[in-house]
Image (cartoon, rainbow, N blue to C red; front, side, top):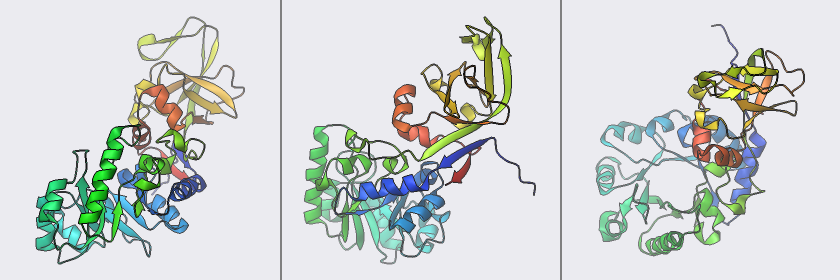
Length: 348
């Protein structure tokens, strides 16, 4: 098979990933796990698991059984849980893989009782998000009696805000902890960790902050950028003063300009909302403003002041997650998970 280099790559900083996990772990006395769903938020779940497991992380979470199967075999001593629980079509995988389901409904609890052969499970109880999880009254009404619960979980709905809902969910979960036996209890996601040690319980489950996202102001200055998207210059063009660039002629040259056309577009997750927001790229510390309309797999930058940049050179996108989110209107989660398969993932 002929190996063909990609014109797109994600430079991924393993030291920054581990440093972020260690900072999150240091915020409480609880064990610190890792959410690696959506293929490790787009970085590659197997690689993320390998780096974090080597650093001491032992608890990982994915969304689906297909994601769990793709991670087999697990590193020694690692625990993996499937957040979406068990549907009728999941039972073969649930019986076979060394993975725990996170049961989310009385129907899933009944299914696991019938076919789980007494194996341990995790359980999600909804304390106010109304997404996944048993209702509190169901959990307290005997639905979980006799289950071998490894981890009882709930999920914070508004932890990235200073909301009264945070304290309400904390109080509800504290009551559940007193009433429902489990080996461990877990409430805090990335933002929940920043709310303080009261939210940590026995296990925290960070996601976005591992990968360079800042969930709350308390994390600013502590979370390091992990993902650096880069694109190769396909062609350099001279655009005369008064000429336009791209679909819809949305950018007009105010002088004779050098334009770098690069191999990237909205098909790669770099959406049209980035245009006109002040973002761009750099080449050898030279700024190249993004110009014109982003198309499916081509993008243009003004390289007039960027020295000798030329065909084949790599441009580094401005992709600090908090800053890019503020500019584009996309969430930090969308910015990460939207980066497409044409990016080669390169760990350093």
